[in-house]
Length: 467
Image 1 (cartoon, helix red, strand yellow):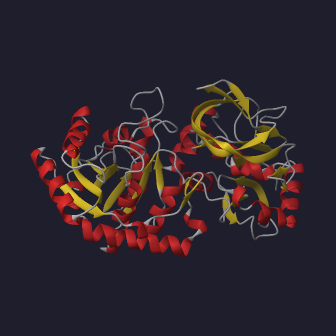
Image 2 (cartoon, helix red, strand yellow; image 1 turned 90 degrees about the vertical axis):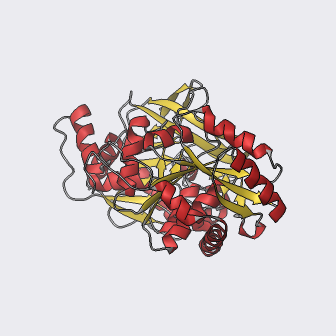
Image 3 (cartoon, helix red, strand yellow; image 1 turned 90 degrees about the horizontal axis):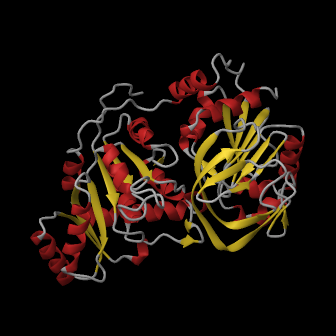
């Protein structure tokens, strides 16, 4: 564990002018290509996205970690990065949306540019060059000069059509004084399948995903100057920060909010839903639960017919239950076990997919029936950051606790809130949402517990009280 206030690891931020330019292709390919060289590569993703980090983890063999300045606050970005990158030879950070796009109406907050500045990291701009030639120089010049504190170290040209096209692009960028660090030709065979919320997660297509990552690595090896990219990464100066620690953050939160709070006796079992239907989670959640004293055990609601032995708490995070509604419904023994656990007052933390699973039905298929609510797919995408305050005391947080999170779903649940709502949103709209009943806290809102470690401690204490 790195505890020094001077932390240094070579690092790159992979950004783009807009979504769809090829950031994930390049970032994942770079991670895999450098890993193949025998380097320990730390993968990171700017923003709240859960899916891309799964591909990053496949490419590097290390947990993909998110760096979100909105949910966790700018002050935690560098410490969380240092925690994830400790002991590594290189860190690659995939950006979000366009380089300067962030939380709506909040300036640079949560943008890739802000993350790059907080990490003092050079930026590589991935440009979709498929419909331009000399204009690429004007585009890149604009991104390089927009914010002088963002250091644009080079460009990777994506979707280049021919040798002649490449020559024109290189000539234009040479005039602009911008290094070309890679050129990738159009390669549809490397495309990764998408659906209503983005890429199909790794857990749902592991063998095919592994083949895709290997193909991306080959494409990047062939088209990018890995030595020049590594040299650029090494120009990143040391960070003046202490690496985040789940143990220290729990101690600090206990001192601030609940002095003298006793650690749970023994190690209560916290069962965390996994498998193909529940793939959305942040690595820090499990680390915080363990640091709080929990024994974390993963189970698969698609296959396991009982909760893990001794379950004292149940975490059902995000994912795609709508894609597996028949299979989840068919596992009647587990649905009954979840319902019985909740009815007995067991602490349950459910986010988004977990909310749908606890309802009465999903697209007409019976679910656990813990909540008197029915869910269905919708044509409308609900997406965005939220500022929230806990409306009701729960196993996660006392009423009045303020957190930032995000929503990301194409489903609706009716009613949208129970008699005791989980959250009251204060921005960008005012409404109540979610359900608190007995030990259950269920909501669409995704949160990052590193921003409020007391959530993990409180939940672990509730799980310990069940024994």
